[in-house]
Amino acid sequence: MKLVYHDRFLGHRQRDEDHPERPERLIAIRDRLQAEKLWTDVLEPQPAAAEDILRIHHANYIKTLGRMGEGVWDRDTYVRPETLEIATLAAGAGVLAAETAWTGRETAWALVRPPGHHATAASAMGFCYLNSLAIAAARHVALGRGRVAIVDVDVHHGNGTQEAFYDNPDVLVISAHESPLFPGTGTTDETGMGTGAGLNINVPLPYGSGDATYRNFMGMIVEPALRRWRPSIVLVSFGTDIHYLDPLAGLTLSSQGCVELAARIESLAAELCDGRVAYFLEGGYHLDSLSEIIAAAVGRASGRKVKLKFTDVKDTAGTAAGVIDFVADRIEQGILVPA
Image (cartoon, rainbow, N blue to C red; front, side, top):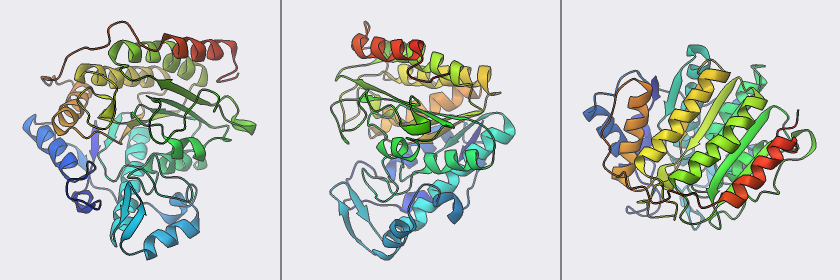
């Protein structure tokens, strides 16, 4: 187990001090990991290389972001003079996490901010500037290392990641997310195009979905899809904003439910790709649940148990049987993840 982190990530600020995507998110994670004696094997990243960034983002966008200075990009996303520098370092952390998972055949966590999965080729949005996971995935493919599977469990649909690989035959993208919710994308009929047809899987979930629903998502969708795909590495956009205490959304996973997601993904990676899995921190805005989930997930992967406080299970029956059955049937039929 390796952690990838840099104190420079704490220098990134949105417009207002009380913005939900604030430095205290990483401070809470770091403090909890230190308290649990899990702040070990911490790697310090370097900025992502320009050639890696430009596989995903347009050069003109990068130039615009760097020259902007300070101002509002959109209502959710503020730019400061240091924004591009810190986002480039976050992307470098993602590259290092994926590289570490690949070479070490182990789990790695990129504990970064700003997050990345909403950033598109030509625009920042949704607190995101550079798509760190997409940059790492594209680099992996460019190096000839085989297929990539991306699993996005942030509460918001990763529209930037979907866009990046929508016609790519080497990358499978699976996203479960609350719907309707920002950014408004991620319907079941967005399945890829061209040589990427059938390799983009969206599972839009209704308000209130929680532990039972996500167990079905893993068992009926993620596990059969990845077993058919046989990836060489699994990259995970991990947002704890799926937790019932998160202030920005309406899903209801418990802390244990979130940790179970990570455990099942790691079990799949052990089965399919020698344990090569890298997690990229995305959302999660309730500091106590955020920090305990990350600590427990890191602890579990390291053979250590972390006591959890926020364990109420609010979804025991599964709230999205229709959409999960629909997507699972399309996988079974070979419409999604075609042979």
